[in-house]
Amino acid sequence: MKLAVMQPYLFPYIGYFQLIHAADLFLIYDDTSFIKQGYINRNSMLTANGPARFTVPVPGASSNKKISDLKFSPDVKKFTRSLEQNYSKTRHFPTIFPIIREIIESKDRSIASVCQKSYQAIFSHLGIEKHCIKTSELDYDRTASAQDRLVALCQKFGADCYINAPGGRSLYDKRDFLEQDIELKFIDPLPVEYQQANSPFVPNLSIIDVLMNCSPREVVSIIKHYEVN
View 1 (cartoon, one colour):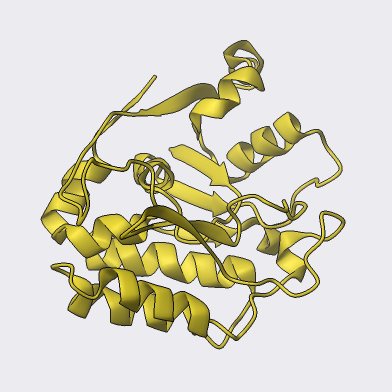
View 2 (tube, rainbow, N blue to C red; view 1 turned 45 degrees about the vertical axis):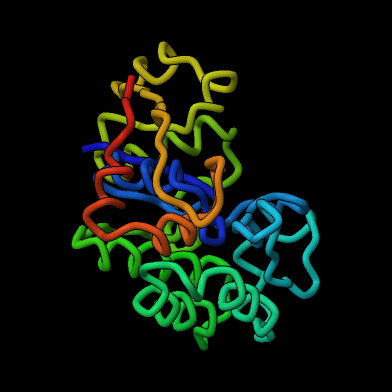
């Protein structure tokens, strides 16, 4: 069984969804510190003037608090208005905007809950069944080192393969995982392009940009465009 773990990111880029796709089970790592200026509550969309950052406020956000203790602001009008202004003329806006709006206006404002809902709703739209669990809901040793926590989570679910994002190559050694009978692999997204409103092509935008411009079949093809080594 292949396991992947990642902090919750709000409507992340395609590589995040490739990581979820590559795993049999995806854990939303929400019982760790909030990262300010990261991607937990922001990403980028495409505007007439090029890529621009969007942010959904998190009241009381601090690196001294755990993600699981924080919630998104209920005021998301600026975000939804920006989506309408910049994507209303795209092919799939009529289908995708209601999905995004339902997610971002969820009554449960917990960061992890909103992100969990988004991943599952997007994969459902694509006709792919994926299961995501929040680590804050699990019983495991949270006092262990970062690597030992990952090993413990793998062992908890009987995973014999742990898939990490490319940046993990500088953090973890395959030999350390093999000593615990776990194969450590890394996902490598391959270059992709799709039709955008502007040119030249702007890569690594929020998944929203992909969904607005591509059919479900095209999005699935893009998501599958990666290697695991």
